[in-house]
Image 1 (cartoon, rainbow, N blue to C red):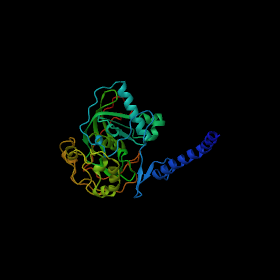
Image 2 (image 1 turned 120 degrees about the vertical axis):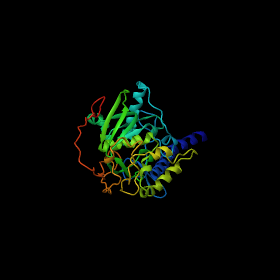
Image 3 (image 1 turned 30 degrees about the vertical axis):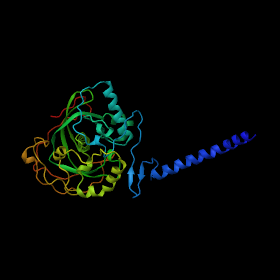
Image 4 (image 1 turned 180 degrees about the vertical axis):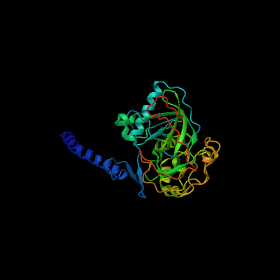
Length: 331
């Protein structure tokens, strides 16, 4: 009889216990993932710092976003891509899937813990995954080099999935056009001249293959402004192999040079290694102050304002648009 009563009491209390457990889980989640939107993609620490959380998992892959200060983000050199088989094709599709789900416009292999010389991007933005026309802008970039940087730069606000924080963004100077050489997903050699936002995205992802984060290019004011975010990410990483600074040699040859003051372009653009073969008269030694930008890098934001003018008007060179070609080239 007592046994039956005990069983009855347990059966009666079980739903209540389960409800209490679920409430406790919900309460913890609400505290950790307080958000002003329905996606609950933000976390608040004790200093009320709003942190944008990367998803802990992604559909169709076991890879996750590698976050600062994990050493994979700083390790150089990355292994060149030599095999372009079915397994490689599947990996590139996984990278695109992660990029779209994380609301990004580009993703480099070190950002998913792979020290391989590859990145993917789509300047159309994360909505491109549902738009066949925009998916035509997907690019797989293997073993890339930037052979020439424009002497003109523009300044725009950039963030990074690996820095995880909407508040961990700052002004970054990028060349307004670049000339590139790389291999596509089929191993075909490609040469393209890129401009505008696509050039900015390419430079951002190319930096990842050199162990450089956009934070390394921030002016001193912006670095100071995001210091709490950086310290918070450092506090989350408990291993003793944190890699805070980039490789010294890669840092020395960064092009364009990092900003020396907020919304100011580099005072000098160095010629020589990494600077392309621009004629001397095309490379001004000083730049005018950049105008405030109206949009950020984020998930496909618009362009910043140009910060320099050409020293003389030159004949316009027709450039082939290779956006829809398997082997685009520039003339």
